[in-house]
Image (cartoon, rainbow, N blue to C red; front, side, top):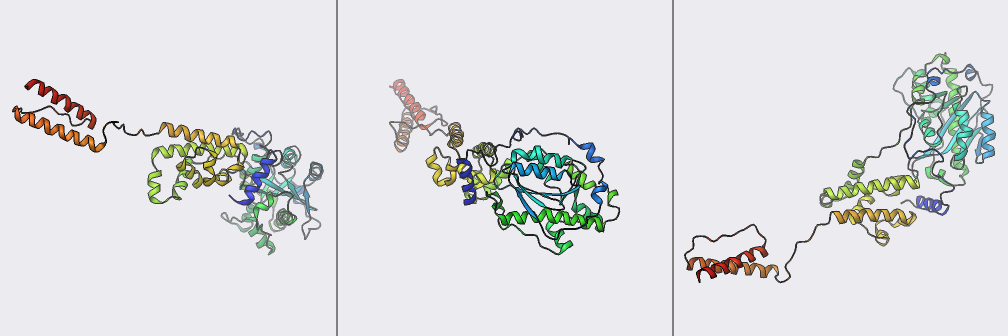
Length: 426
């Protein structure tokens, strides 16, 4: 496990999960209760760009003006300011490294005057009540790059956006192309000749307090989104009558609970093994145990809200399946980071492995206490020779003999047969 992630998990454990990523307040995400229809379906289908949003901007900022929002008071204040805007640029940075479902760590909103960087991890409880009002308002146009972050707003905050315009669709309209797909970095490079600042370490946005350099780099994204919109208003004629089919389609997409595939995980765990070990490990009983451990890992990832692949990798899960540890001491060599996870979760794992071993245990063959294998063979051979002598002496054609019995039973059968013949012909 990455040292940064290990430190992060340790920090969350010490904080009792009261600070970061606390069970996604009142969202009922883990029960999978999602809406079957977009609540603003008709509004989005009939939505058109308001005329106020198409008015020319008197002066365009040439540099970002980044403001970091970390408190509830500042969030309430900027949301009141946003309600008076006709157009805002909306973006976000989603981190899927640690969280089971992924989580928006930073929300980026730009207006004509400022670029706001909202710490959505700290302000998780207050995003829906404050920012949700702005994002649901059809009179405020939201400029996004490609719209992929909209389902993340549904997932993390239960916010359904209305009045969204995707810049990649405007780019296709301008160039009369149906297949041109550009991300924000490529779009800024084409329109302004500038390079957006790239995050050298995406995980730096998980640290608190946020590094200021990362905040500045994040603020640039929404700033350039708004500048691209200003350019498209000049380049595209009759912008108000564009249907915006793709933007509406993306806005109406609903978030669905991820369905992680057991077979894919099983195949990945097999790929990390040598061919010989793979042939031994691929038996049905091992696959059945791996499936139970796979379900255990998903349950664990949901409860502590950590990405299941990063929590315990598929190869490590296969190692646990093969080694079948029975206590925490056995885990030290298999998974050194196991102490970062609470002990009662591992007890569940030990119970699963113990029950599986008990059910699929192969009983050893029963051995006679008085006869070793070699001695048993000698005694059987001696009895057969003795019966053959009796048969020749008394001129018997055949002596009944059962060959499909075990060695010990054969010997007993021969002993009874010998005594019977001796008694009969004596």
